[in-house]
Image (cartoon, rainbow, N blue to C red; front, side, top):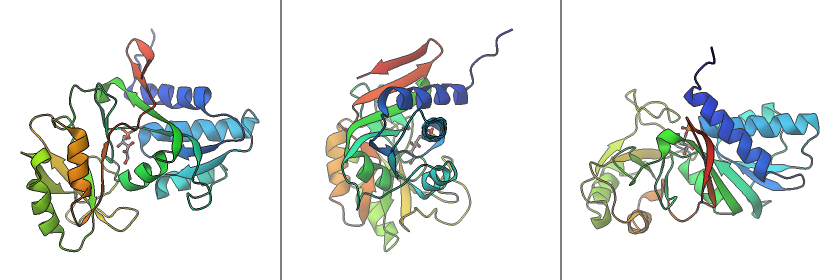
Length: 244
Ligand code: 5RP
């Protein structure tokens, strides 16, 4: 009897497809963070080893991804040296019908955003559970804030008009853990805190919400990635399909 596909199988399918379809030899690529992006990183390593891919330079979006890529022998660089990327591939926590995203479940949203904004193509890879009608209620929106006066910053965030009704919760425990636990604030790769914004109803205007968050002193960046996606590769029970 054929085994049913697990969520990890679906993540592998989209990770591999993104690399097979969008990563060419001689290019500069952005490597995302998380369990889905990890499959794409594995695939790049596999194809470099087999010689199918050559002369890749990769920019990782977190310390975890950097360590994974180093183990696989993927040549790495930074945005300081290479700020024009051909393509970036990353997972997401939620994808709305306009392909706006929530990202940062793994706490890497700032590095992900700065790298993915530099890519000509941003390929988002998800299993079908990430597809939603509106951002917010399905997955809290992560915001990276500086530790100084973080309780004040959290109060300021809760007053923003485009984020009405949100409850900001400081992420505790392991930064890479989507389910906050432990009793110490989780620390990002940049030495900051993450606040997860919980919503009961979808955010009406993700662009305005993002602008208001970005204009709040104490906020480094937020996990709303609006208007950035080139293509979203989705895997579900029916197979792999593209949303663009
Ligand atoms: C990390 C991220 C991840 O891409 C997002 O959390 C999805 O993770 P996963 O592929 O493990 O479900 O934004 O900051």
